[in-house]
Image (cartoon, rainbow, N blue to C red; front, side, top):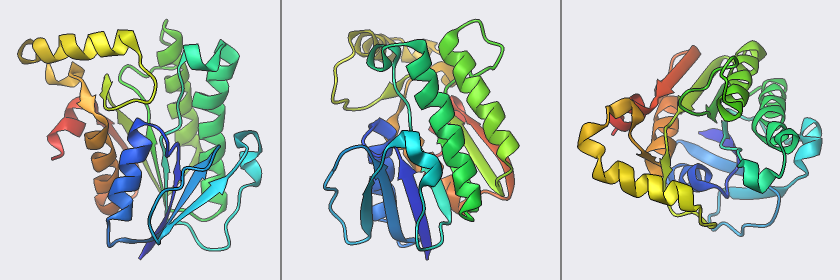
Length: 214
C-alpha cells in the first residue's frame, strides 16, 4: 500500500487525481497540500493547510511513496511575471526537492506542450526551466506530462480557453493528435498509470501519448 501527496488538488488535474487515488486500492493514505480547506470526503484523505512559501519546511510522520504535482496558475491570476514564476517554477522545484528529502520514490508533474527553457514565449520558457530543474533533483522516477489545452470544469471562466476548446472540438479531425485538447481526467489518469507502472528514470508524456493511454 502506497502513500501519496498531491499538490494543487483544487485545480482541474488535481481534482481528478484525488478522484483516481481515493478510489485506488494501491493507496492507503493521500495527503493534500492546500491553501484553504477543501473538505474532501474519504477516510484515507488528509488535508494539510500550508503556506507554499514555507514548503521547504513541510514534513510528514509517515513515509511518502509518490508525489503528484499539479500546481499552476495563470498570468491573470498571478498578477505579474514574478508571481507566475514563483508558482509554476519555484514552488514545483521546491516540492520536488522536499519529496526527495522525505524519501519519496516517484515525482509526477504537470508541465505543458511546448515547454522549453529557451522558448521566446514566457509561459513555455518557465515550464521548460521547471522541467530542467526537476531533472536535476534526481528522483528515482520522474514523470513529466505535457498536455496541450486542458479541458474540464473550471471554477473561473476563461473566455479565451473556452473559445479555443470549442474551436478545437470542431476542427478535431484536422488537428494532429499531439496538438489536440485533452481532458484533465485523461491527464490525471495517465499520471496515475505511470506511478504504478513506470520504471526508474525520466519519462516524458506528450499530449498524444496522454490521449493514447486509455
